[in-house]
Length: 114
Length: 116
Image (cartoon, rainbow over all chains, first blue to last red; front, top):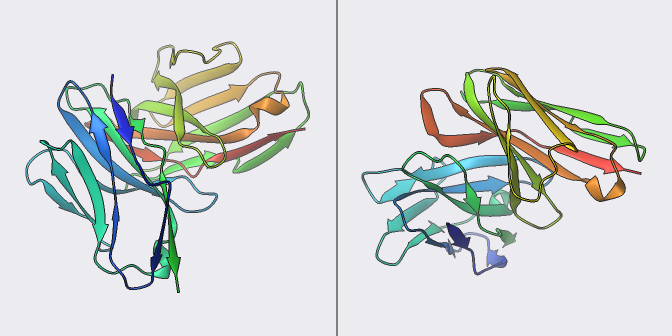
């Protein structure tokens, strides 16, 4: 069985400050890792993903995440946040061996303070 | 690409009635679609996995007779909440993955169900 831990349920950050949203996972098999963002009353949008290759993956809006196998982490970072980044962020994991089911963390609410 | 739509976006119904929610992949063929339920301020819980042309696989604790899933084509899956009760009120979200790239799920915008 897999599990995902997002320790921070809420993260308030001042505008233009850096942010890190933490994600740790546990799995007995190789994994794919994902970050999804959910804006109020909307579904989830894929932010970025790690499937294989380079452990550092980036999104088009300035977020990046690094897969760290030894620490079983996939933390999400952005060097300078914007008001529009206010949303709920979910980390998720799936089995790289073909089981497509996603296991989600409990989410982190990122609030940007003007 | 990889757009998933849901209809309706919001529905309010009386207790005891049935509600059908549609999930469509608009620009790709989806071999597998997933249905999730999300309670306020909580994460998504997988309810079932549906493959085109076969019976859905339900997660433990999800009543298959209450949440009927039909995956009639490679672009459409439906979830019917039968004999809905107030405790079924929730945000229902579907997702789909591409036929030739099953590693990533693309999510619909969700359906807010309120049962009075």
